[in-house]
Length: 355
Length: 163
Image (cartoon, rainbow over all chains, first blue to last red; front, side, top):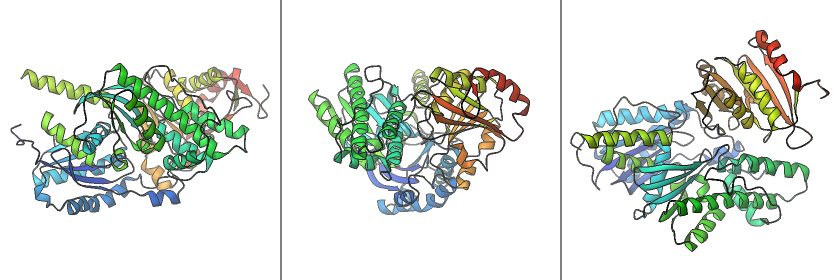
């Protein structure tokens, strides 16, 4: 820890995130103290387009990155000279979108002469729970459920994790989004299904629970198709009952596998992350069933579950402390995988240990 | 060319026949309503290309790239996109320089995607049955069309679905 000084509770990290739809920046001190977290959420624009996202273009990030970073500094009431390091998402994500954040982070780190830290977006989601609950007990099993991912991870502590299971076809959030669109429930799809399901009877229609008793991987493509087939054959069916039956099937599979993973790995805590973690049934079922089995439950706030830059800054703080900074010539890695990145990180760590 | 699949094995067989003829630079546009199996079709093609990694839906991430098969496969999804400039930002022609590109919901960007093979999928009478319409846009498949036709002969039907 010599070339970049000591990483302490007073170390201030600027986090930048542009991997997908959101342009985000945050200031986090000491890895857990969020001084500001700004997300350029475009929900109102999305709604106009009926679920279609017009903001994926890199030029949108390009327009938003400067004001979003300025807003993060302003809200945190700090001058840019107070920044000790810059953390940025290098992948996975869209190359054009990632490059905007990476270029901005490099320029900022270079201008301020502070370390730059490349962060894996998926790994960063694991730190979101720590931001809301710094006393989280490890080992923990994390269920990361969003539009693009459905992952089960075992986490020994910050920076130490392994993949237990993942979707083999559609992500859970994608199924919510597509079912909402199919039932014409509105956008965003997750909250729309959640709301309709509260009016419906979850037992009216029994939808399939794919691979429920089979390993820790997930499959939601068949469920999506089953919903569509059911509605095509029963055009007069209540959308609320379909939403309730669909949501019950998704949550049943997610919670069953999360708890099985926690039991099999002797975890102390179960943690939710990703946009679907905002689903009310998922939250209440995890709370009820995990508590009954004696697990501690960490349910981060919706702001921390969805894409944000505070988790990037937090992940960056731990990575800087444990592995040091990245080179200034790091690039965006659109297909960055969580497991390969873990292997690389662990290899780098063991290499350093030998020295 | 019209094809009929009685079950998932037939669908995989059709995907395999196309995959066997693929080269770097090919773009395959997958069209069809939600739940017709565009991702499943791509999974079958990926298996035929020797890709061991699980192929998952690219709807939210927009582009997934799989290396390690006989050909690099870029799996693209235009479901969330609407404007032409967004589709242009995905640079499908640039992706095609390094492999084959499968584009789900590609028919929404038909006019900006260059030469391609269009695979239109529809659900048949039963849940597992599928009807396919294959169409080559541009000249890229001309030299391979007869090979493709003979590889798919057991699944071929006329435009009214008769064998």
